[in-house]
Length: 137
Image 1 (cartoon, rainbow, N blue to C red):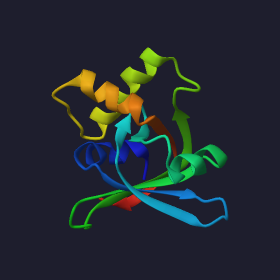
Image 2: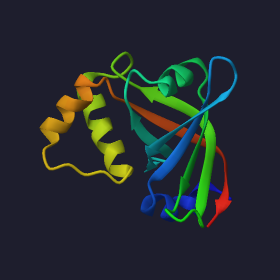
Image 3: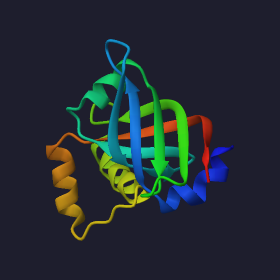
Image 4: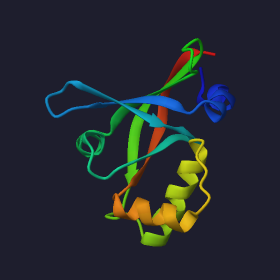
C-alpha cells in the first residue's frame, strides 16, 4: 500500500498508537491524535515525554491509526522529524502546531489560548516520513 492509498482514511480517523524505541531497545507505545500533513503523518506531543526522548535518540517510529471498532486500520512506519523550540523559529512553530493539530482532527475556539498552552507545555510537532504503509482499509 502507498501512503496516498491511505490518505482518505487517515483524514477521517485520528485515534492512533505511536510506537518508539526506548533507551533499552524495547518498544514504548502511546496514544495520540494523528493525521496526514504535507505528505507525512503528524501529531503534537508534550516536550517532557518518553516519546520525545526516544525520538530524539532514535527517530524510527510507527503510527497505527484505527477506527474505534478496530476493523479498519493503517500503519505508517518511518523516520520522525521533531520540530520544537530548539530548531524552529517561534512564529513558525506556533503556526505548525496549529496546522498539525488541525490535521489530527483538532479544532479550538481560542487559538491564542491554544498557543499559550502549547508554549507552556513545551509542545512539539512530530512529522513521520512514510517508509512503509500497510493495513486493512
